[in-house]
Length: 231
Image 1 (tube, rainbow, N blue to C red):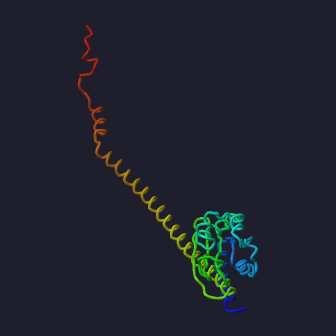
Image 2 (cartoon, rainbow, N blue to C red):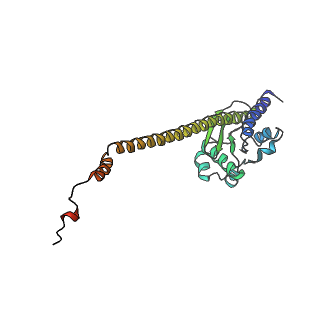
């Protein structure tokens, strides 16, 4: 096992720890790496609890049929593009019913098959049920080195995006907590002000007490009976 293989395994282990902590599952859609990323995951004991299935969609037809990649995207952007990488990841996520998906599409070499893109170029798609994005890099090496480098880059990119998503989720949770606390404080303040208004209304209405006093002190002879003419 060379140094890059060790780096790949270490990065895979780091990502898997994150996945297992939340009880999540992951899936993979690979093109140029031909299953290397899937292999890195299945090298980890207990992978069946968080890794169910993956796809190797080497041809464009396979990308369309298996992952739902749009033919229009392939025609306009090419297979090695951010748009296709995201669609590959989203298709794998949907088909596997997983929590997160990683896709890899690149040009490993030694030739670029007539494409106007450089050998060593790779796009990594990362998708969850709430977000999706793509990362890209350029690697210089032979075919085998590029494939391993693509997998390593995919793992590091996913770890980075995962950590960012966790920070965003925590900030969102805190915002919701603050919002609920503010709403509760507003309700309490409203109730206090309502009570004050009612108290002020009672204090500004002394006529209620006077009316009872007036009834008890009436002693004149101006009642209806006294004014009536009985003749």
